[in-house]
Length: 353
Ligand SMILES: *Cc1c(COP(=O)(O)O)cnc(C)c1O
View (tube, rainbow, N blue to C red):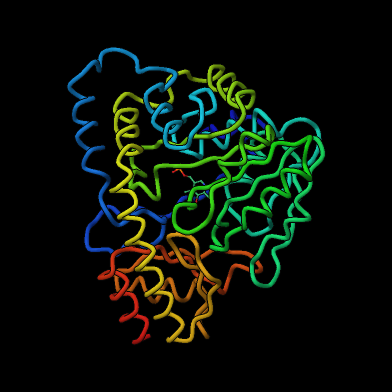
């Protein structure tokens, strides 16, 4: 038999793609391994998606996602031209790598962070350098300096859960006048401050957010970027060189309605945060150590078991969590915050390990 991998391009052979968390297809699992929201999406978003299905499905969707962008712009006090929408924030981030980081210099990001960043850097041919988190898992912001490329970090950081104060974000913007600074705010709604108010004064700032975590719509695949009109133009150029219709009609309807249902959003975020605080206290009682979390998950070290051992033990109880490989990641497991009942079941299982 001929091996068809010989047709792979050289670049593809050298890639080490991202490995997403397991999505078990059978029921009965307590699924705390991919930071999904345990609550359903806004009923208004569901209704809007039904409406979309009954409308102009034979036509292509609005390539500019105008209504969704308007909803975001109104919420944030921005112009529609300062908002870009994409097929999940992963796509938006990838476009940002293509648009801003391939200028010759080194991209800078933390050593322990979202593992898609090095994947995107290699896939897009962007040289990069990492800065080491301190022993409390804080990003040394004064080392986040890039000439002629960019800086990227999540706020709060993932998987380490620690947030960056807004004045430190602003200092990084000032320290990098010739590079784009991308703040990946996938988890910002669970306890960090958004950098969006800094957009007007800092043309090098791109804030990226998603419906996947705080709005319970990981299945919809909608993310967006906010920044200076010139940065948004660049992302549109990249998109229109690949696929003009990345956000489908159903997603655009649902996404706009989700953004406009502020009350439901606040209520579900508050529930997740309250459960997180209770769960974190429970873990500490059991001897775990964990940095303070501003996200919808915790990064917790068992007193004796490694993260991989903890994962295996909880799997026996049909509880799924995430463990990472790597020097400073092996002790801490990443556990998403589910409902109160789910987290009580985790604490109960942990007590009997
Ligand atoms: C989940 C996550 C994303 C991606 O979210 P999507 O919008 O679902 O693509 C981006 N950045 C970080 C840090 C995340 O954890």
